[in-house]
Amino acid sequence: MSRYLSRRAFLRGAGAATLALPVLESTRGTARAQRAPGTFFLLPAHGGTVSAMNRTPSMNDGRGAHHGLHWWHPLTSDETLRAINLGPLHQGLFDDLVSDLVLLRGIDNEAANAQAPHGGGGHRWVNVTHLTCADAYTEVRNGKTEPTAPSGPSFDKVLAGHLAGSAPYDAIDLGVRGHSYGTVQFLGDRQPASRERDPRAAFERLFAGLEADTPATPDVEATRRQLQRGSVLDGVLQAFNQLRGRVSRADQVLLEAHADHLRGIERRLDMLDAVRPPMCAPVELTGSADAEIAGPLMVDLAVQAARCALSPVISLQVEDVVTGWLGRPYGSDLAHSLGHAGREVGPTGPNARRRDDWEREMLANHRWRAGLFARLVRGLKETVTGTGTLLDESLCMYTSEFSNPAVHSARDLPFLLAGSLHGTFRTGRFVDFDTAPEGAYASRASTHNLYTTVLQSFGMDVDHFGGAHAAYEGPLAGLT
Image (tube, helix red, strand yellow):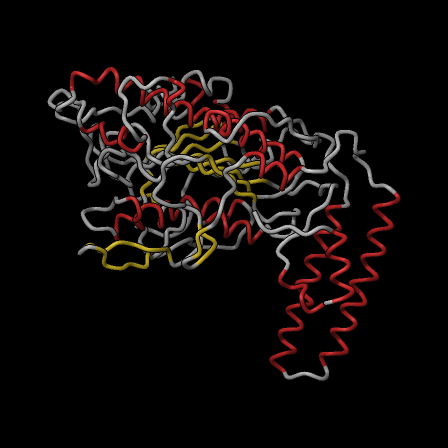
C-alpha cells in the first residue's frame, strides 16, 4: 500500500507549496468510492503444493524415494467440476463453491525453466519470474549464477497501473508472515513490492475513521468540500499556467506532469466523497499477528476492502507457514523442509516408515492455505450487490511458485481461479493443458499466456505479457 495523506493536509499543501504536491502517492478519507468495474484478487502461497512433477517434463511414479502423489488435481479428469470429485487439498473446503471455480493444470513457468540452470527451479529463480515472466538480472555468488531481480513488473502491478484512478488505492498488498526467500511481487525493473503483514496496521491504514452508521448517500458537507477543493486546485493549475511561460521547455514538461498528477489526485479525492457502498462497514479486529490468527484476519480485511471499493487489485501473499497449531507429526523445522521431505518418504526413501506422519502434516498445512482462498471466495459470494454478488464481479487467483517443492519444479504449477468477472470466465470447470498420455507430461502453456489472458479480461490492449520464453505468445484458449 502507498503512503497516505489527509485531505486537510493536502489542501493546506496545495495552497502553500504547490510544487511539492507531485510527491504524493495517494490520499484517503472516511468516505469511500463507488464500485469499480471489476476487482482482481491474488493469493500467492509460497512453497508449492503436493505434486510428483519433476523439473524435466516427467512424473515420479511413487515407486522410488519420492511420494508420487498429486493432491492438487481432481480425482477424475472430467472437465466439469460439478460432476467430479475434488482432490484431497480441496475436498470439503470448496464443495459449495465448485460452480464458481476454474481449476487449472499444465501451466509452466517458462521464464524460470528457460533461464535457470538444471532445468529450472531454485528459489530465487522462481521468485523473480513467477509473476513477472521477465528476464532476470544475475550475479555470481560463491561460484553460482544467481538472479537478483526481474527486469519488469509482476502482472498484478501492470493491472493495477491499468486500473489506476478507479478507486482510492491502486493496489492493496497484504501478507501472512512465514519463511520466505523473497517476494514474488514487483513494481517494475529491480523494484520489489512491499506488503503489510500486521493486521492491525493494515486495519488502521484502511479502515480507521470508518463509522458503521455513515450514510450510504452523498451529504451537503461532502458537496461543500468538493466545491472548495475545486477552487483550490483551479488556483494551483492557474499558477502553473502563469509559470509555464517563464521557464524552459524541459521545465514546461515537468510542470505539465505536475498538473496531470494534480488532476489525478483531484479524481481520487472526489471518489473519497462519493457514495459509499451499503455493505461497507468497520471490520471487527481481534487477535495477534501470528499466522493462525493473521491469515483469516487478512482475508476478512481483503473482503471488506472490496466491499468498500478501496482498490481494484488486492493481494494476500502467504509465506511458507508452519501450521504448528494443527499438529506436527512429522516435525520439520520449516515448511520448506517439510516440502523437501517429499523425496524421502517414498517406499525406497530413507524416511519411508514416516510417510503417514508426513502426509498428515502436509495435508493439514496445505489445506489451511487453500482454506484462506476458500474464505476469500465465500466472503465475496456472500456479499450481494445490485447486479449479483461481489464474486460475480471479481476474478480471484490462488497459486504457488512451485508445483513439487521437493525438487523445486516450476512445471504444472498450481492455479485455482474463482469468480467469472461479469461472465468473462466460464466457471465450474477443470481445464487441463497437459497434452501427454496418462503417466507422462507435456505442455506448451506458460504463465506468460495465463497472465496475458487475465490482463485482456480487464480490458488491457496487450498481445503478450513478459519475456520471450513462452512456446507461443498470446492468451490461453478456452478460459474466457
